[in-house]
Length: 371
View 1: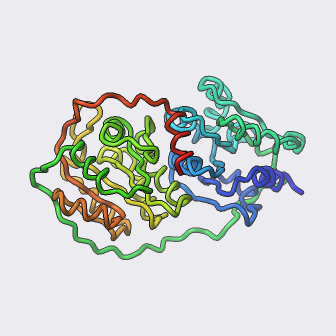
View 2: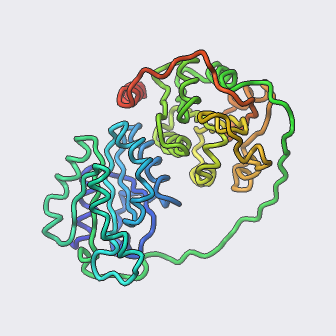
View 3: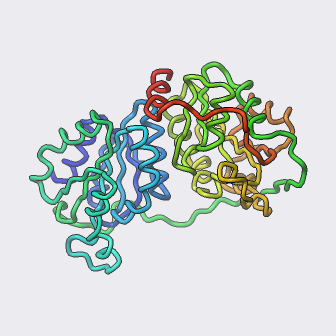
């Protein structure tokens, strides 16, 4: 057994069956050895991987991440407001660039600071340089899951017996033809967010899941109708839909409604890409578009300047979508389980309801018991 196989064997032994992956040429030898029992999810940015892994963890599934160490700098906020906040286990295997025989200056600058960064953000790590470092890797990963913690495994290029340039067929552009015509919007929305959320909560089934974006969306869902099958995001702006995608894929017997907003999609448009890429049949993403950053004081977003999220979504291949400001159409779209529901609402937040009194871990544990 070579070192790459030892790494994969340790993951499989710990029931890890999906790994989110962002390419690095120092990981090519490892990726050539992927076992048949592990599904690789190719991601477009590191925080997308965190959201997908977190969604799977809510369904009781085990995942891991494979990224380049420069990507650790892109993870800090999301890592703290998902995995660490909710105490969700995640082993992150990292190609340690800039540490050993590194020819690229930019990699050296960051690679020399990785340990200091991980110490500063209180994330445990382990250095893997040789076969000896892999001897108890099974037990180490098991401890990560048992303690519900994040742990980073820094893999030096020394770990691999050889390095290969490529491990799969080259990508090549094969782009679908796109011809869409999407209406614009210049009306006057009739509903506020809290009124739209009441319509959502009145339309869902008893066994349906509701997952809500951070800030006022989660607060207003809680104050409208708290239930065990609601999951409230308390951080990680731009991740709710990613979490919902992974959750829907793992809990196929329930329909998942994600209550999201225009600001979230402009902050992380990768979510729109992943709705089209993964396309779970049991997922409805609701974009409550008020043209505003509602939770920070209603400053205008790009939708107040003409940017059309429905057009973006349709151009990516999501045909099961609707844009409306009509309450009746909105409710019908929810009951029909439309994939992407773009609902125009008034800016403004509910002033009556209180804050969510539950701690993050309480929200997670209650939700996982319910599903």
